[in-house]
Image (tube, rainbow, N blue to C red):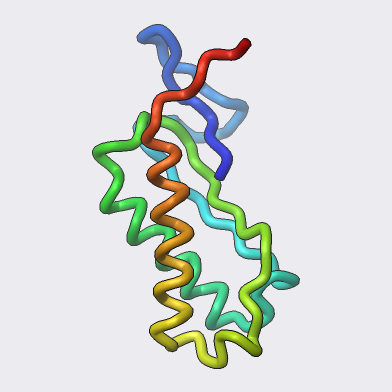
Length: 108
């Protein structure tokens, strides 16, 4: 998960975009090389957005990008509608949002 802080010392920091920045932003990136079937990629993105909505009040205001960095093997998860795939995806995303809620460690 990548995070770009949108607010610093009470002043709004606007990244180089053509639109206004306000509050919490969530993005999901699921490359085809890690999840070959579109139905699997869509499931992962829906899970990200669903869990982000649940954790929205606990996350600091920032722009977040959740990026899939490993494969969900078709041999292990035969169907995108399987309970096993739903549970695996949900568990990993929950861990990411739990880490994002923890205060950042001071740089040494």
